[in-house]
Structure formats: C-alpha cells, structure tokens
Amino acid sequence: MGKLYDTLMQDVRFEEGLNACINCGTCTAICAAAEFYNYEPRSIVDTVQTKDDEKIIELLKSETIWYCGECMSCKTRCPRGNAPGLIIMALRSLSQDLGYFVESEKGRQQLAVKRTVGQWILDFGYCLYLEGVGTNMHPEQGPVWDWEQKNWKQVFERLGANYKGDGPGILRKIPEEALDEIRKIFDVTGGTKRFEMIEECSKKKAAEMNLNLDEGIGSEYFQHIYSYNNNQHNREK
Image (cartoon, rainbow, N blue to C red; front, top):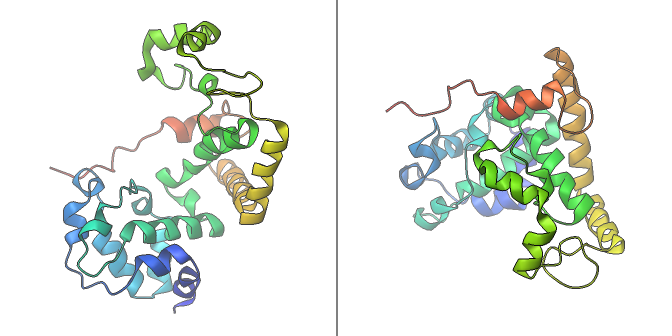
C-alpha cells in the first residue's frame, strides 16, 4: 500500500496541489465539469488520500480523471489551499506512464491529442496547425472554413500575417534550428518518452480491440477513439 501514492508525491504538481483536504466539497460545488459530468474532485482527492494502490489504480484506469477542464476554479475556493486540478494533472501523467490510460474511453483519446496537437508542435512549432483542422474531422467549422482552407494565402495577406513565410510575422515558418531545440526540450523533459509510451500502449489496445492502427489519423483505431461516445459520461439531471 502506498507505492503509487509515493510516486505521485514525486510530482511537483501533486505536492503543490494537496495540502490537507477536509472533505468539505467546495471544489465539487464550484467545479464546472462536475455540473455536466459524473465527476467529483472531492471524491478524487478523498480516494488519493487513502494511499490505497488498488483504489488509485481504479482512478488511473477510469474516465474520471479525464473530465477536468483544468480551469483551476477549485484552487480559488478551497479553504485549505488545495488544487485538485493539479492533482488531476499528476494522476493523468501517472496513468500515461503506466499505460492505464487506454482502459477508458476518454483516456484513449490521448493518442488523438498526441498525433495532432503534440505532433504539430514538433513538426511546425505551433500547437494548432491550421491546415490540419479540416471539416472532415471538425464539421462544426462549416463551409466557410472549407473556403478558407483553399484560400489561406489571400486570407492571411489581408490579415497582415506571414503564413508559412520566412522572416518575422504572425504564423511565420519556424526555422528548423528552432524546431530542433523544441525537440530537444521534449527529450530532456520526458515528453518524447511520454509520446512513445502513448503510441506503444495505443497499438496494444488497438490489437486487443481488433482495430487497425497505422501512422497518421486515418486508421480504424484513431477514428474510433476520435468519434466514439458511449453516452455514459454526463451527470443525470
């Protein structure tokens, strides 16, 4: 008992986020996610404080830790200065490190985040790569977005941007030496290893689910985790 709790204690976010919870429930009362999801930050902190490895493993495999929007409203209201949002960050990291994230629907979506936002940062230097956000995966963008996708150059010239251009300017092309520095930061901080772990665990889960998983975003497994919803996440009114 307590080995996973000790591991969590090595994460500065956990150390900063948990002082002395008195189980008052103020964090749940102010939580925006708790209004819509089957989610109670108070219960999560209560579970972690048991230091029971089996209960913590249940959390790491659950949907629960992926509901938090990290707005940190909990921090602003807690009478003891706790920050359940930081505790959630530490739990998510541990879930990824141990491969438990693939056991929940929301957790499996980490592969989608990694292959879009994460890969865009490494490839382009931006967390949002505009040409990667098409209406095939984001239909809510509408037909105007389709037009913009075909007319980036004219649109950004009118806005005064330097899209994919050399030199200064908004949305400029990031020099390769700067991208190399970003990749080195990922290497040193453990980001690269985390990405590799997400890929490795996702491939195993895809095989378990009999779904194809190739590179990119077009394979069966990727499309499944991107679009599937079991409709069991929302709080009953």
